[in-house]
Image 1 (cartoon, rainbow, N blue to C red):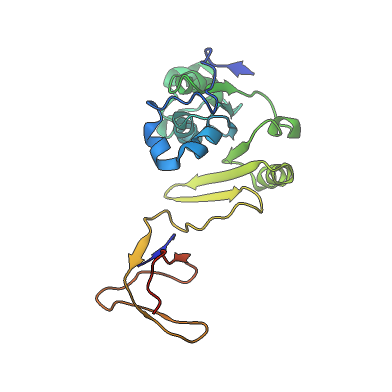
Image 2 (image 1 turned 90 degrees about the horizontal axis):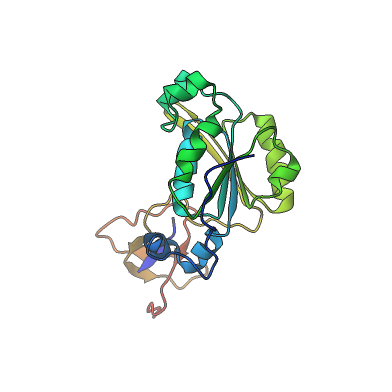
Length: 231
């Protein structure tokens, strides 16, 4: 076989777990999926999410449930009635009271996971602010803001993500530096195929069994398990 590998703070939270004190009963599924080593890095991570419309609320919710050490949300714009169609944490009362999107969401997000410190950053973000985080997420920002933040984060080894949603279409940009390699192109399960033969020339040609299409594409990362008979 071969395989293709296609500052307002929320109510006091418990101290985030260290690499030696992960709640394995709470995070058992994640540990099984990501592995303990990755989980130990995650529970010590500090993340900034700037932009708390619908996309920001969903990103913050999922991240906090995953269990990083701290998540800071940032959005000084007051909640509007149209925001209620996408941000499920906002209410008409928030709009009437003139609360910012970040302030209105903070308490409810903090309730999701007692191990994660959730707080709000108020005011403009400076480079000194960005430097405090391991990952910075910019949502629904202008191109100028994205480029400036990304250039700084890349120079400091800080992971950077930006994204926007346009109705049924969306855009996502990820920059975790030059040493970050992605070999999974689509997130799908690895495909496998039965090898019918390998030619002897250089480079050789691999032939798969004719009963079914292998489904691989140009650029796929292919591995041959140990023990493949090359005779």
